[in-house]
Image 1 (cartoon, helix red, strand yellow):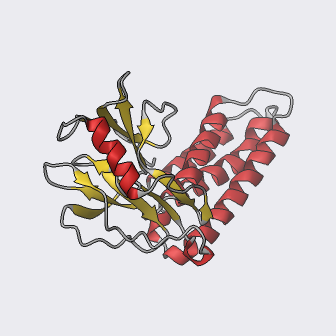
Image 2 (cartoon, rainbow, N blue to C red; image 1 turned 60 degrees about the vertical axis):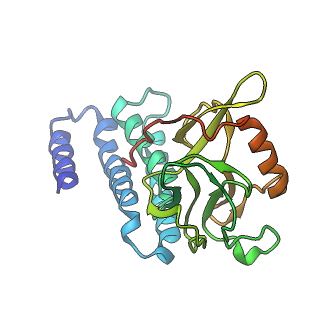
Image 3 (tube, rainbow, N blue to C red; image 1 turned 180 degrees about the vertical axis):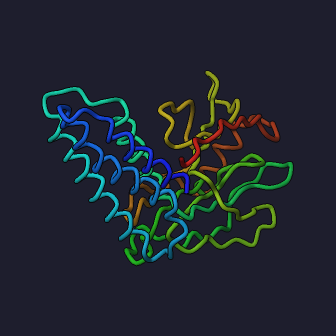
Length: 250
């Protein structure tokens, strides 16, 4: 209802636009189209999973067409701020829609966890397993309490029997950045959105799939990676973890 009220407000305001300013009047319809699709993308998790990709594609096409119309209307002139903001919000919604239905496996309890025995259902050589989006800590990683060891959407959940891992819904995909000192020892972890521009440390989650496309792989064997992790902890049980709030999917 809030969105309908917003469109009614926009339509009413358009009546007050002087007839001589045809650009503003002509911008109302594409603006409403962009905002309507932005709203629909924010609700995309409510539709069946098998329909989401098609819904995203339709929304993207509609947004691109409306933005193209605005570009035609305002060619050679500076856009009003409201039009820029609407297009920026639509771009964010399109990116976030890729992660509709996101879930994660998180370390519960008070002690670090050596990542092992998780069946991701992913084989880089088997195209039939390349569905949805997936990121995971490589086997042999040492994860701190509260950290995700994997997140996914659009595919089956990883399988684990470890009671220290809890499956839960996630608002946004996170990365775990591990800071190292000058000697290569672990200092602390930062949980932050993958949308963050900064990468303050070693990224612990490896992106494996994005919307069905293979984008990464684990680089070390589990034993070799675990040995490196233990050496970098230098006898400590764990390290501090800071969480930077992820941006809301607004």
